[in-house]
Image (cartoon, rainbow, N blue to C red; front, side, top):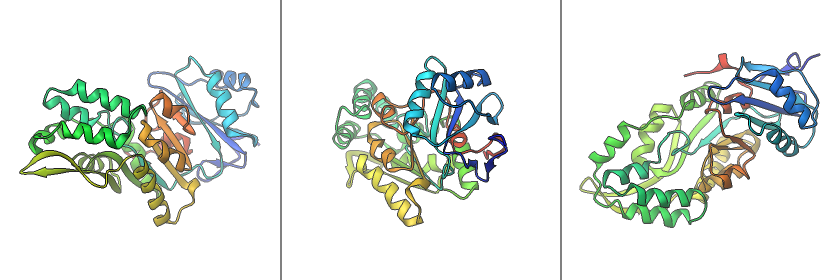
Length: 308
């Protein structure tokens, strides 16, 4: 029996682990590249199950350490714009998605956009970059940046909201998982003024975000306590998991910055998306080249399963 014939419902197989190969934008995934990577990684050459022609394919492997197989395959794919996610085949279809917002579900860092309104983008962006790289305490860096935004009005914020662009695959990821019974939450160190419209556009079930103090329709420069940072994101995932009665393996988290690390580690599958090196190096999975639909392929969804 071939691997594709041995597939069970939900994109799972009786094989121990599954390696999902996903091509980056503008790149075609070929059987030759996959087979070469398997050989160089010292893994068994098995039948490919195509989830989307030229884009994504599963290879089910005998039971072994997913971390070792992942490291070997990533090394074998060096120089190729192809991502690979390696995980246990059982339980790959997730029931809870917890996602970061800035530079993950949307293409902007909202606080940097706000800074641009008053001519201090470079100053605030430098702090943002260091905080996301893990060089600064997130909560302290957030308060420092928000203090510099005192006086920005709600009308000015609305102009930023109007030009936010969604990350490619964001709606497909959330809508497809919801259509198959998953719960989805936008969990961010950003602000409610942005999370509400972004969540509505993408289709999230709920949001967790920081609140800005506002007086007479303008920012005072303060964040209302408690400030949601690294620990807050992890706590949100744990709270949702317990509320929904889910096992840890049934959860999926995605983010790009150092404040996402605890959330990614807590999830059954934590994915670093186009992330800072410190995050990509420790996450269970990383997507460097593909868009957010890679997370659907990683769960065994086929292209014709996607909902927009």
